[in-house]
Length: 106
Length: 120
Image 1 (cartoon, chains in turn brown, green):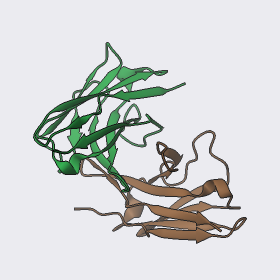
Image 2 (cartoon, chains in turn yellow, cyan):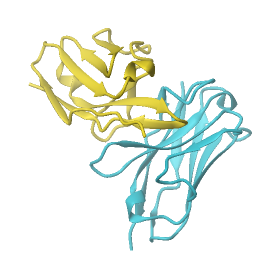
Image 3 (cartoon, helix red, strand yellow):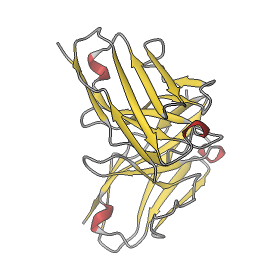
């Protein structure tokens, strides 16, 4: 069965760029969606279909998908970006989430 | 504004049944796919089940297939999850999430969740 993998944790200095990865076999053949979840809150869609930003999501959030890795890029990181980030794909009539990456803003 | 309000979470014993509901408003409910996603305490997101707008197509994670049933009442703008033979590992916050008209993903709106605790 298909699997998507994410690093458990990542850190970024305030104002710098964070790149969060989501790995999977030929993941570029799939649409990857990204969600941000802060403690005690519901997830929020931040990137859909690899690189589309929903309304209300800052331009600092962008996404790409190539080969075996999809990437969520957060530019000019802010303290409020500290959260868990999950990638999501559709495969064989099921939905798969990555295990999530906890982003710390230093 | 899209609103999703889950209810029905409770503390139940192993082997018991429970039905969750998700009341939707702010969009044409019958036109959109819907999903249930859960999150065990301190853990990541786990997709549970999805259903098409008409209700004709349903999808399940292997971990709940045969025990859980997703359904919807488009006349009441409500999504359901019937959970039978509950296990300790089903303990989680259960979120309902809105999909797209043609596809299950992405989930562009989420409820705040309802807590299900399975314990003796």
